[in-house]
Every structure is written in structure tokens, then in C-alpha cells.
Amino acid sequence: MTRHGWESALDGLPTGVALVGDDGTIRWINRAGAAIMGGTRRELIGVRAPFRLASGPTAYPGPPREPGEDICVWSGPRALRRLAYTEGTGVRPGVDGTLVAFRDITEQQQQHRRVAALARTAASMASSSSLEEVLGAMAAEVQLSSDVAGTQIMTFAPGGDRLQVMGSAGFADVAPFFDLLMASRDRGADLATLRSMGERRQCVLPERRARMLADPAWQPLHAYVSQLDWEDFVSTPLLSRGKPLGALNVYLATGHRATPVILDFLSSMAEQAALAVDYATLIHEERSAVRREERKRLARDLHDSVVQHVFSIGMQAKALSGIARRLNDPFAQRVDSVAEEVTDLVEAVQRDLRGVVLALQPSVSAKLGLRPALDALAEGIERRHDVSVDLVIDRLIEDDTKSLVFSEDIYHIISEALHNAVKHAAPTTVRVDARLDRERHLVRIDVVDDGRGVPPDAAEHSGFGLVSMRDRAGRWGGSVAVTSVEDNAGTRVRAELPVPYADAGQWHEEAT
Image (cartoon, rainbow, N blue to C red):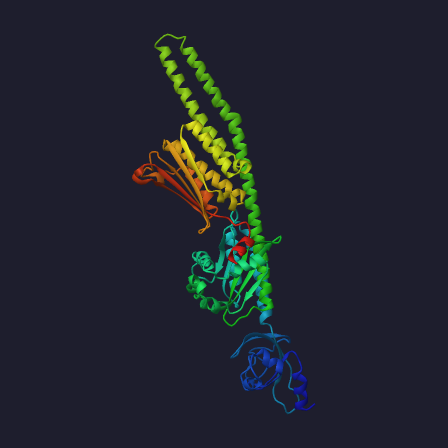
């Protein structure tokens, strides 16, 4: 076969083939090989080949190698590739050089790394009880890919429905991102995250960075997204039983595109993240159910044992008072004084126990509804403590917040604040004002009394009640603050709880 003949035959192969001279340079290359190496034949002929061969300037040192594929890296003007190659013998007498057959294994190597990343993610899910730690580890695994400039995993924390960044890699500061994202949404920006969740499909946005920087609606996020060198954006929803739990957002590095391989990898990682979120949610729900049952049990035990024992003590104190009337002074006066003191203590303990039993019932607002439950709470406090309770409850709170757990937390925060007021501040009036701030997507609760005010060291001696209120607000990303009313004429307890969204579909409807 003439040289022209074998060149024509090799030119039709889908595998790269090159003729490497004794000086280590490429003498000839077929069309597939030129495409793999990212150049034209004219550009590549005469260029030093990346292959290390059995003889010549690129020979391996040491003993002869075993036959089979070797691996090398090609760094050309327009391509960085990992190549697997095998070498043959001279083409024919009179033609110097070695034929090398090679193929591109860049994607294959990346796929191997991604499979390893999935395995490490599964291991972290099994060994860690913290959802934030698991999703942080997953974001770090995605970030190891050479295609990726930045990674975010956004989801709902267990027990809450407020979307937040739970895992991130590549970005310097995570904290301000969500507020900046919401500010951009309020200016009319198109949020691909909400779209991917609402439509339950992977969204790929080419040249996203340039489009964001050119759009004034994205101005709040311009500085944030400019800290990375990226071009395209991919948002993959985290789905569990068809329900969106969040999204895996990836900012692809400049020069890289969303190939089928990386899209499959991101879908696999999103599936793993959804499993982690689903598992954490189930654990949270199970613990919440256990806590509710435990609260009910404690309420029953208190009512059936402690409350009855206290009642018996009160009856004994009244009997002791009757006995005192049959005694002579000074014993009669002394015994009657003790009986009266015990009776007063019993009545105080009974009031406190009734409040504790009421607070331990987690289903009050579930059975009655939030407003009727609060009306019943206020009526009971007024009857037992001779305090006027003024309730101002925005009806939109019940209309717009459908989460039973959220409503129960609102009820218990108000209940705890009311009981603290009548127990510690000796007020004549307590005003409860709960309103829905639709612009900020939160419920603001103010419980204000006209009692003694906040002592200077209140923060240092905050009791379990305040801790409980802060725990309940904290699970929704909210806060509780206790301050004095002007001129120390009373105390204000202010709680702010971000409103939960029923599902990502509602987010999507609001965004569009």
C-alpha cells in the first residue's frame, strides 16, 4: 500500500492516529486525531507529541514497558485533554516513525471522579447526622470538578419552609446571598432556581453571567456573582416523590459547557441531596411527633398526679383551719395562720400548674384554630389572674400560613409571653398584636404589658420560657427580643418569624 493509500485508510477511522517521528514530533495525523487535539493538521504537524514511546527522544527510561494503553496529557492551544494511547511499529520500510492510536478519555476520567464523589457523598450521609454538614460536603464534591466555578445547594431546613443556602463551595461569603437573591426577585429578576423547582426539571442557562450583569434587575447580586470566573448556569431540582425540596445550582467555569456527562452527574448529585433532605425531614418529623407525645404524657401525668396531690394539700389546709377554731390561743392563731398561708401557696401552685398543663398541650391551636385557641388562652388568663388581655390578631396570618407546626409555634410563643408577663411583671393590661408583614414575608408578634418593666440584668437571667420562645422562632429563621417600653413603663416581647411557603410551586407563581 502506498503512503497515500494508508493515509486515506487511517483518515476514515473514528480513533485518533498520528505518525510520530524519531525526533518526537508529529509527522502526520488523521482527521479524528486533529479534532481530539483541538487543532488543524497544519497546526499540529511539526508539534512535539505528548506520547512517550519505546524508542527515540520520547522513550521511557528503564526496562521495556509491557504492551497496552498508556495515559498522557495534551495541552494544546485550544484543548486540554487526557489521552489514552497505544503505539505500533513503523508503517513500512522507508517511512520513519511510529504509529500511535489514541482516544480522548477526559470525560471518562471526570466520570470516574464523579462516581467517587457520589460514593463519598453516600458515606458522608451515613456518618453525619447534620443535614448542613452533608450538603456542605456534597457541594465540595461537586466543586472538585474542573467544569465548576461555584456550587450552591438551596433547600428548606427541616421543620421550616424557608428556602436557604445549606451547602456552598467556591463563593467567599454565603450569608448575604439569599437576601440579595430575594432583592433581585423583587426587582423583577427571573430566578432559575424557582423555575427549576416549580417546573421540576433541570434548567440550563448559557451565558447567564453576562445576561445577569447586563440586567438592572440583578443589580443587588452583580458584585456577588462577579467574584467567580464563570459563564453558564445549571439549576437541578431536588425531587422526592415528585415534590421539590430545593435545588443544586452550579456555575460552570469559563470555557466549559453543560455536556450530557456533567448534566447526568449533577442530576445524580441532586438525587443524593434529595435523599439527604428527605431523610433529615423524616427524622425531624419523627422527633417532633415524639416530643408532642411526650408533652401530652407530661400533661396527663401532671394533671392526674401532681395537680391532684396539690388539691389534696389544699383540702388538708382547709381542714387544718377548721381544727384551729377548736384550739385555744396562742395555738389557734398560729395554726390558722399556717393553714391560711398553705392555702394561698396551694392556690398559686394550682394556677401555675394549670398554665403548665395548658402550655404542654401541643394540639390546642390544631383543634380550635389559631384565633379561637388564643381567645381561650386570653380568657383563661383573665379569669385566673385578674389581668385584661387585649388581642389584635391579623386574620391574614391564618389565611396565608397553612403549616400546622408554624401555627402551633405562634400560639406557644404568645402563650409563653403572656404567662411570663402575668407571672413576673404584675401588669393590669397585656396587649397582643400579631400582624403579617407581606413585604418582608414574616409574622411580627408584639406582647406588651404595663407591668414592672425589664430589669437591667434580664438578659443574664433569662429563664426557660424565653429560651423556649427563641427555639420556636429560630426553627423558622426568626428571632425574639425583650425590651422595656418607653420610660420603663412595661415590657415588650417582640418575635419575628419568616412565613413558611407551602411548596416551591407557590414560590414560582409569585416569582412570575
